[in-house]
Amino acid sequence: MDLKTKFAQPSRRTVLKGMGAGLAAATLGAPMIARAQSAGTIKLGFVTPTTGPLALFGETDGWAAQKVKEMLKDGLETAAGKFDVEILIRDSQSDPNRAAEVAGDLILNDGVHLLLPASTTDTVSPSADQAELNECPCLSTGAPWQAVIFPRGGQNEPFNWTYHFFWGLDEALNTFVGLWNTLDTNRKVGMLFPQNADGETWGNNDYGLPAPTQKAGFEITVPGFFQPRTNDYSAQIAAFKNAGCEIVGGITYPDDLKTFVNQCAQQGYKPKAITVAAALLFPGGVQALGPLGDGMSSEVWWTPAFPFKSTLTGQVSREIADQWESETKKQWTQPLGYSHAIWEVALDILKRAANPLDRTSIRDAMVETKVETLIGKVDFSSGPHKNVSTTPIFGGQWVKGDKWPYDLKIVDNTVNKLFEPEQKMKVIPWAG
Image (cartoon, rainbow, N blue to C red; front, side):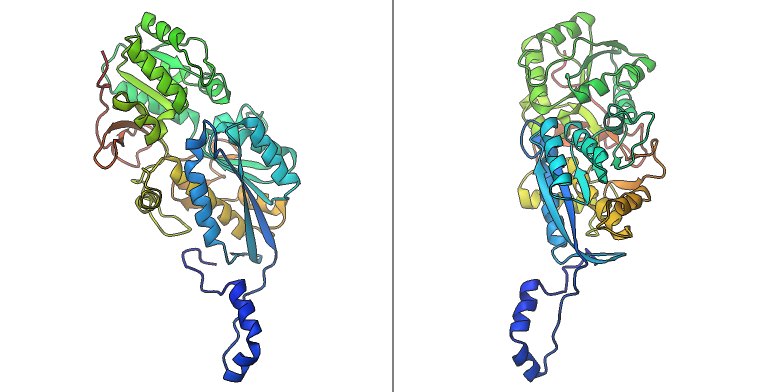
């Protein structure tokens, strides 16, 4: 089946209607057109944070999944024949325990042939654990690969069933350092980490943000990790002020960053740069900061400027972003590219599997994946880890926009040279 078409074959209802009128059709000499019989139904389990504090990460997942459901309404052509495809979508509710619960249910009770957890470590890792435990192939994205591999014990022992494509923490960290190197500062960085899996990974002294920052000649201050959704950052702000930190770097979620930035302004702390992973991915998160959002900086996963074409629709990134904005009336967000790409990779795997109703066969096809997607190449034979394929990342800064309140501009390409920076990094306008 060519997913770029609108599917010329008739639906089941059309075929049944034609069968009911068979005598008349025969009398008129009209040919009967019957749909090719399906070889079975492939079940796909999709886990995403639809609700809860991480919902912005999963905002584009449902939209992309519905597009794919429509594409697959008449089945999927594979090397083993034509199959119906059933997509079961489950909400992780932004809770790792809930993610594990729904993933286990999809594997053990719904009998999915392939599990697809997307968006955030809190969704991906517990889902992948269930897949590994119950021997179900699992394809994931939307979290730095080290955060998915290392805490689960995969640093020295590769996994058999769980494969992940995304950029690496080391690349993101070097992007942060690249951003800070463009500014005139005292090279003192205050670090902000939550007490969760992401915070523990980004704050790790061996492979987290402290290591490359210090290696680049910056002095760091790391106060105690904060509890997510806390209402008081006075201790962190006081530590940063006392140390004279002109830069803040780390990882937070949108609600936490809003509280932190507002308290910085209230308490007279005005750093020249605030570069935070996760929270600053989204236009909504930046807009929630009001005037304080101007100049915030972050890693960039994907933008409409990416030159690659979708293997499903033939659209380029700009067209996908325009379609999202036209249909939802919302500004494009970075996870959109990955919300689309995970289906490109999943369907490529199923098309190549010797038996797409057999989990081992799907796993074997996943290992051999080499496909160009909307976010770049996914190739599990060339990753830094057996279960990983890395993808491009850039440094970006939010500036006042025209169509939307803020636009995200590429300001650093230290890690990846796909594009030249769109403009230079600037100091936060409200900095002291």
